[in-house]
Length: 447
Image 1 (cartoon, one colour):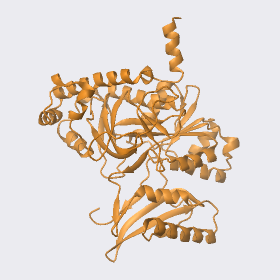
Image 2 (spheres, helix red, strand yellow; image 1 turned 90 degrees about the vertical axis):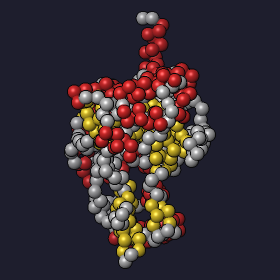
Image 3 (cartoon, rainbow, N blue to C red; image 1 turned 30 degrees about the vertical axis):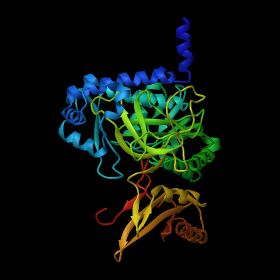
């Protein structure tokens, strides 16, 4: 065995792809080459981007890769739908493998195609993140997502296949059935939304399941919903397992994963994408500052993204480098998780700008209730009202439920200067979904 092969095998013990071990200079050269190839591809194949490039005064033959990144026009999610209705996908149907769509929790679902080549790269992207967070071939994993058109279930299933991990099929099953599989198959890795993982833990006692004795879960990988540090700690306590989070979307694929070597630090997967974090003037923020996350995909060809404005406000990490050896740009976890807030999530209620993340934070701080909640904004007698529905933990007395109601009413008024109508329901009353839950429902006309 050559020294080079030995070195490669040593690297692969911690990294799925050797590009993860590139120095910063080598990584940027790699990105620059991929970006140049993408621009040439779009100029040749896509009238939609040809028009946008001409308007920006950009020609592929003179494009210098990363040095000219700022010259590329921004895209927004609404442009993706416009592109699909005109010139996309770029490949004929015989070359397409899958169609997926967004969850639609914030509006009309947007559909996205992937070619066979795209999907191999997409699967590798998922495998890279899962491997970094500790998933191995020897594990048995259960992906607790619904069998639907959105991307989470499919990308994780493909990523696990790439690693060679044993997978327990659980799409379309009830929570009780999934809990039974966790025990019967001695599952070691659970993948799902943080709220659903907590729900599984909550129903375990009623099924006679002792998580500490009957389950062998050692690792929980969450996605699709915010998972701030306090919520991660609850999951660790319930399951007795390590908990790491992943950031991604249907449009972009995976974006970042939480590093076990440096918890609460999310490494952007820059060997598959180019990320910018920009301030209100579209200038790069400094370490420790907040800005909007902008994404360029480097691997997708059926529907590439060019400087997509994600609408996610994130915080650039102050850390330079990481003990894991990756030189990727990183995001810092905040009290709201990897995403500080959404630019379009703010709601104005009775003249007050309301952040959904702040609602979630107050709910999570309240003792005696579960993570499941639903805030409904509606109109009553020509005035905006907010009704917040929460669930107490199982076997909570009526007197305790009333106390929770009073405490929440007081906290919301003190913190947000808005009066909330609090409804404390019975445990299990709110809908359970394995995928991204719709926590805020705005029923006002025109909203």
